[in-house]
Length: 195
Length: 293
Image (tube, rainbow over all chains, first blue to last red):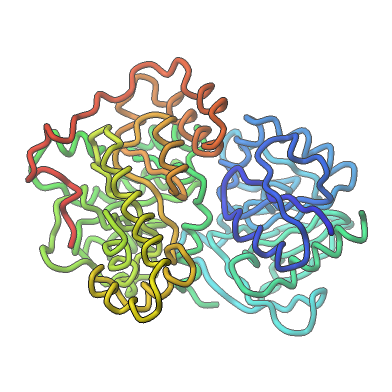
């Protein structure tokens, strides 16, 4: 069974843990660098990207994760996790540490305040024909992608909300808040193929 | 695209889990809070200990202050309205705050009814002293609850009492058999469907934070170990000697609440905490936690 960690510094950790268990992986929580040992992949959950970034640096997880990104370690980031994996962040807070590694530009709070948070159905051909129900909460958007990045899902107006670059998978929304585990299974398959 | 859905409202609280929400009264405070790693700020004209000291009627903050704080930070901004004052809440929604706290810290506007929160696009957090009160607020549409504690006291004892009451209440409901749930709903004065949910899942249907009395990193670690999903700090940060350092320390202790070494490191050399009040020294009619029905 694949061992997949959930970064547990802050955010909706338990929801990802449950989704991983439902997708046939063996989840564990990561708050310290030594807890990365033995993992085949990791999820960076939804949460507050400024908070998670500062705690990554404070508790010496930033560099170990950056090294793993370079070595091809599979990482799935949702919402805040997507911001933390992006190479470029528009309107970042001052002093906002990120892991980076994915050749995308993201815009934080791209839809506005919580009033504008929404649910919608997305077409995500990589996980099947049935639409994927998606919850966007103060969500970021992918505003630019590099040549090596595949866009997996867009809103009706064409704006990108999920993407993959080799070992890195990101989504603007929260599949962990729904009962649909297809995107988590897609990630578990990515991890299994590699390990 | 559908806005204001229950999943979007309760979901934002899920994103705040494991984090610290700090009361701030200026844009400068808000920046200090964000820099320290707060997951959100609560925009107020006065922190609770100053509201207590000032007396008189405490109301919603000036929109100018709330907008000032919204512009200063990128993290979510919450604001308080009086219990039952749905017009204040409509104003807060129009201002685009991310969460409304229908709060006992302000002077109640209605002595019988809380706001019907399902009517709003913006989600609500409400205080509770026990399971019944928590489920009543959720029934009215609160997408997040918190202990009331005793705001502005700098004393954790009431928050502990309220968190234990909620957790004990959940355990009790779990232990009941199906035919006992209706009587328990009557006893708790709580919606039957929500009592069934607690019986089945062993937890509240929404996120439950601790509020009211947190002043130190160890206070935060205590409440997290007692089952809080996260921490509100009111007067505890900006009424202390070194707000920036204490704010960061409380964030670190909330993340690593089960690791006493981290909490010890975070607690070192923070200077004076806020002064604090013995609860018995507060006249009964001035207890904020008693407000709400």
